Length: 292
Image: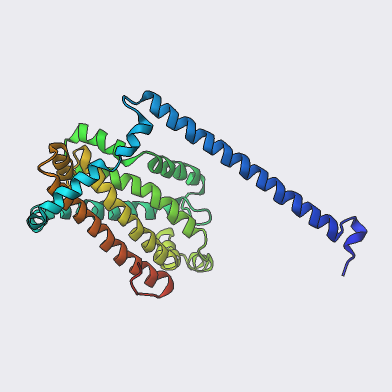
C-alpha cells in the first residue's frame, strides 16, 4: 500500500483538516441561526408597528376565538349529528374537487415528467423548457389561480378544480421526474432495438418501474389537495370551505355549525391520511397495516 506520508499528507494533518472543517461548519451554522433570529424579531416588531392594535399584546387573546367555538359547540353537542348530515354533501364536494384535480394533475405530470427527464425525453432539446413550465406551475399559488378563475368563470367548484390541478401538475411533475431518473434504461434500450416507438418504450420499459413511487406521491398529494380544496372554499370556490366561511362570518349563534364542519374536515383528513399511508406502505415496503 502506498505511503501517504510520501505526498506530505499525514493522519494528523487529515484530522486537523477535518476538525477545522467541523469548526467552520459550526461557525456558519451559528451565524445562520443568529441571522434567522434577528429576522424573526425584526419581522415581529414590524408586524407590531403596522398592526392596528398591539401585536405582542394580542397574543394573549390568540385562543379566545377557538375557545368560543368549542364552548358553543359543546353546549349544543346534541345538534352536531344534524349538522353532520346537513353539511355532508359539501364535504363530498370538497373531496370530489380534490380527487378530480389530483387525477388530472397526475395524468399531466406523467407526460411532462417523462418529457423533462434526461435519457427518456422524446425531444432532448425541450427538457429545459418543460422543466421551466413545471417550475412556473409549481410556483404560482393555487389560491391566486382560483381567484383569477373565479373572476372569469364565477364561483363554484370548477375554478378550484382547475387551480388545484394546475399546481398539482407542477408539484407531481417535479417529483415524478426525479423518480424517472433512477429508472433502469436497459429495458428502454431493448425496446428501442426492436423498433418500439417512444410511447411504447415509456409504457413498457419505464412506467412499470416507477409506477409504485408515482402512485405513492399521488396519494400524498391527494391528502394535500383535500386541505387546499377546503381553503379555496373561503374565496368562493364551493365545498365545505364555503359553508365554513359563511358560518364563521355569521358569528355567535352558528359557532356550533362551524365546530361541526371543523370536526368533519379533521376526521376526513385523518381517515384519508391513514388509508393513503397504508397504501403507500404496501406499495413501497409491502406493509399494508395502518400507522398512527
